[in-house]
Amino acid sequence: MSIVQNFNKKYTQSLFLCFFLISSYVFAQKPVLLDDFTFKIGEKYKRIKSLNTYYVASGDRFLSVKKGRNSMTVQRYALKDLKENVKLRQVIEDKGDFQTVMKLGNKAVVFYTIRDKAFAQKLSLTGIVAEKPIQLAFDKENIDNDFSFKSTYGFDAGGRINKFAFKKSPDGTKLLVLYRIQTAQDKADKIGILVYDTSLKLIWRRKVTLPYTTNKIENEDFTIDNAGDFYMTASVFNGDSSDKDKIKSSYRTEVFKIKENPKEIIKSKIDISGKSITNAIINVTSSGVIKISGFYSNNDNKEETSGVFSASLDETGVVNNTVKSDFPSDVMEQYVLKREERVNEGTQREDDKKDLEDLKVNNVVFNGDGSSVIFGEQRYAESFTTSSSSGSRTTYKYYYRDIFAIKLSTQGNVDWMHKLPKFQMGTQGKRSMSYFNFRNQGKHYLFYIDDFTNLKRTLDEFPTRYFDGKKEFIYLTSYVINDATGEVTKEPILTGSDIRNARLDVMELSKYGTLPNKDMIFEAYDGKKNNLLLKISLAK
Image 1 (spheres, one colour):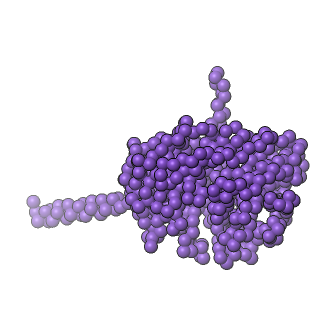
Image 2 (image 1 turned 90 degrees about the horizontal axis):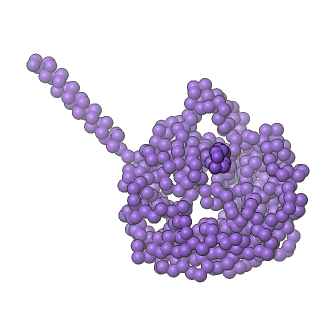
Image 3 (image 1 turned 90 degrees about the vertical axis):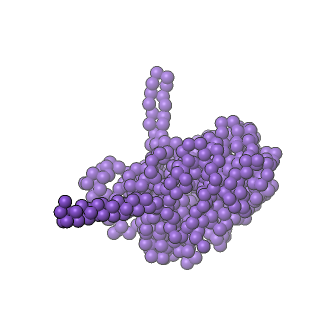
């Protein structure tokens, strides 16, 4: 072999080895948490199959409640090492229809119903203690199975509420139990309100007749403030509407404030001329101001959202200030052009949902300067009914799609607005879909689970669909938004290989334990027989 041939052979081998090493290094790299975060994982423990799981964190303790068919399994963990204390595991008979779990004071509380009665049972986070159930609600009149309030903001999976709703005040010191009485369509709608403290001692209760008949009112969102006063929003139709179709019918949005005393219902209208409010939620700011914030549409096209608003109530419960803004026309034009490009290149169907259809509010963040950031999501469900000799069967597909983030100034200007691509679909409710957001040091973080092929896609590209329960390579991902500038980045957070090959597709992002220092505790599944705890913390 000549010297030249030998040199070429060695050069080719060296080049191949170099390429191999570089390739191995690149593809071996795992997406890691942003510098803003750190994470810690605990030891694996045997998985307990469940229909629903709920988590409560307090101090250095963590508790999970796993709902089976006829019982609940309570697991208790130490957060220092993220390890379950198996000796403190407890199985409790499920005596009724399981509803939800929440933290009240330093206890976890399980809520369940038996026919027209609602009960609560306190669980200790540190010992094998399940206190005697306490009856919270009962009414001599028939309680309606149709809870009727359309907003499930703040509830598990955005799903159906059966008979009773349970909701805490913003500071966690009060508990609201809400239900609806069966009424004829031509009779005034009637609701039951009970407010408790964290020890489950009754503060006040009332059965309230609303000022409109059932066929003219659609109850929307509700809450209590830190003082225990009740607030709700409703769509009031101009005429009788048995199906309450907000696209075809004319209606207005009103706010009600209800106290124990005086008995008068304080009501007022949110007036945005030429617009109809399509979706809104009630919040209480850190200074105690009640605000209703959300989306509206033009009256001549109520299928598509056209703007954003935030209305404040005065101390009496009357709307005294409304800040609103149509979406900027240049942004709307870009949405139309980009959609046309995707349709023409074949990456999006022409008959697909329009960008601004079916928008729902997920959360609102109020800044110290009076501005607010409204986070929404395009979400909807489709039903499919099939018939056979044994009868008909209806199945559902649930869609959690693009995130919308809009900053609204105190002067009624949209400082920035983003459509953040995401396409999640499932058949069993919310589970691993949707997202959660929080703010820290001037940045908004929006965590969600996504298909890995979307990591390098731009904000204008159509995302690959993520299927809930998909057993493939997926990421916990975050959009990061700078509140001051509106700058957006998309960052991979971690994949299952980062947490001992655990499955991220079974992490329910709406259900996690959180501590005052913003540590977030999740439970992951290794896809075989074990679970483990994952703690994500803000970097020090």
